[in-house]
Length: 106
Image (cartoon, rainbow, N blue to C red; front, side, top):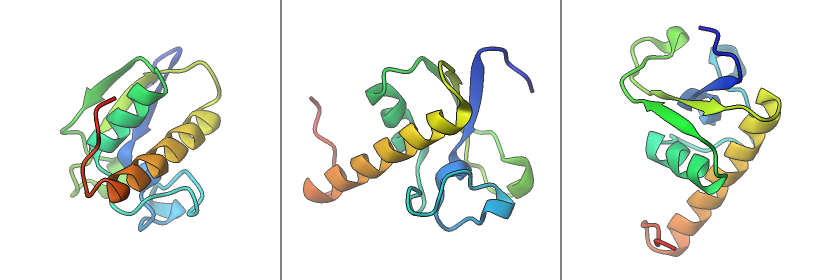
C-alpha cells in the first residue's frame, strides 16, 4: 500500500530475534528483543511524530503472528526514520529496567 508522505513501520522491523530475510530492517545492535506496539507508539510520541496505529495487522511474511504497525508522517528517508525509532526504543528499554519495569510520566 502506497501512502504519499507517510511510512508504514511494522513492529517486526525492530525485533532482534527475526532475521533480515524475514523482515528485520534495522541492524541487530539497534534491534530489541520482542518489541511491543506500546514501545513503538511511545518512541513515536517521544520523537514528536504524527502517527496512526493498526493493532491487529499481520506482517505478510509472518502471517501467523499478530504484531501490528504504525503509519508515520515521513519527513526524512524511511531508513533514517527506522534508525531513530530503534534508538528511542532502546532508550525506553533502558529506562524500563532502571525504574523497575515501568515508565515514569514526564
